[in-house]
Length: 135
Image (cartoon, rainbow, N blue to C red; front, side, top):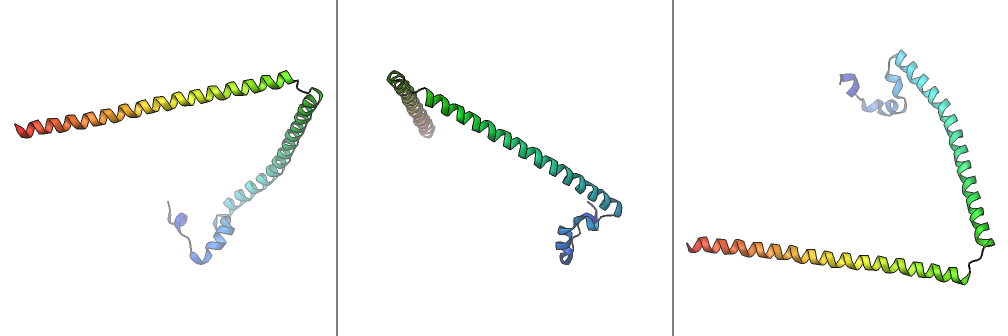
């Protein structure tokens, strides 16, 4: 880095922040200005494109919501379908609870094994240390 890159005069710091191109060479200032103009033109076009995309997404969302409403409103559920859905939910709940109980049991078993290994290792180390002191 050159001295020009790192020198900030405290009195002019606000001005350097607000107008960073002011300290550049004239040709560099021209390039910065051209870049800003290009960005502003693209920013307006991008904002319009983004707005159209959001409008399309919202219209699709409204269409799907109205289709779902029509489906559910035109086809009321029968008692058999309601009972079948309840059975499916209960089955899913029992599967989840059985999985969690199996996981709990396995984790408890692993924890007991780890504690047993640690206690056994400590006993072995103390036993070996006691034998060396006796000898």
